[in-house]
Image 1 (spheres, rainbow, N blue to C red):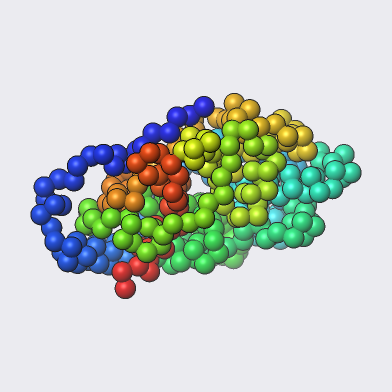
Image 2 (image 1 turned 135 degrees about the vertical axis):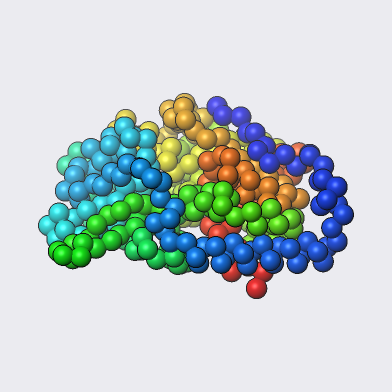
Length: 338
């Protein structure tokens, strides 16, 4: 079990410089900093974020679901663009949510389970319709569009990542260039925008970040199938795990489902969350926390140094208070302080 480590230490005393600033100065600097970061996102393209060299795995929609899962796990990735070879077009993005949909489907229709080994990626559409969930993410953007526009598209579609799709000038066929994630964008900002150091307003005073949210939780003894239902019905990527006193002790993520499905566990999911975590990948990034007194400048510095997808807000006793997602941070950067 991974222990919770407070990656943004709230016990550290603010430096003398921050203490010397008036509330008005902090508010002013916050507005200037946010405006500068917004202009930075508008001046850069999605292509600018891509590394000099990278690997891209694209899956054909005729591929069996079980084979696609093995490809994701073998390459240590949690999503992949889909390609329809019949019309030579981008067909959406395969994510952990699609495997959750498969589990939900066989949970509702156990008599269909005998056909699971024949299920192909293009068959996921029928599963989505059968259980009444959103279809595979198909939103995309051209790599030379601005980062700002890419962020807006992700927020509007509630997507955590967006494929970059170009077009061949001669054949006009689509080309899958890469997949851009919210984390990669925010890390790019943290690495290249010194104005993130100006974001000194405490989280509790920032609308959208300091707002207390009603969070669904589970315990180490909760059956995994209940957590899967929460992930699907709440449209969230994780469910925090708390003890009897409400203290945060771990998190169960949508990507943790992949390890279970690999073992063929589509229907027998009565095992506890604690037992399921024993199958978790060893490269799990850990649980990142903060308090309402922390500042966005510190959070951005953590994003610069560590790979994270959310921060759980805890009080001085370690009890879960709320959660801040990367979508929340992007939404604030794009539309806050106006």
